[in-house]
Length: 83
Image (cartoon, rainbow, N blue to C red; front, side, top):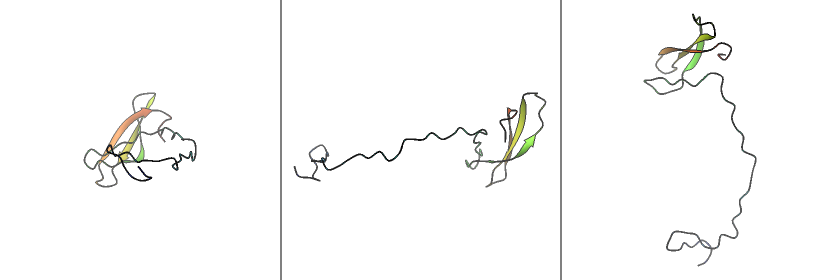
């Protein structure tokens, strides 16, 4: 089998000229402080538009709005994590 030909199993012969290069170390994305909330109708990520008071001492309300249809929703989060 010559270079570039495939065998009966679809495997390429003579791959000695192929090399694997490590371009950079994998990086882990930071965890967002505010979760990604998706619109139930449009399935697009909703944007944070403000905060709302909460009766819970350790929680605050975060208001999200869909940029496509304008639907709004509120989620309670630990105070200080909502930015």
